[in-house]
Length: 90
Image (cartoon, rainbow, N blue to C red; front, side, top):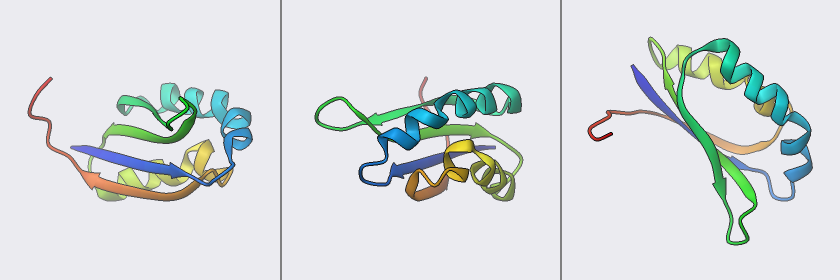
């Protein structure tokens, strides 16, 4: 079942993002449940959040994945929304 994680970085947290990026990308690869992912960009083109589309069994699995993400463990995000998502196009 697809879930979208919509994450907003804490202001001024680019160093936290950069320091944990490799671990985050490895986590995505190792877990094998990410259908699509990428950063949100601010007006200057800098990374300021994340969109992650998960293919997991239920909301609890999405929450567990989100909580275990190295970015979350490092305290990067100001907020994270988890929304069930229905793919219609693409």
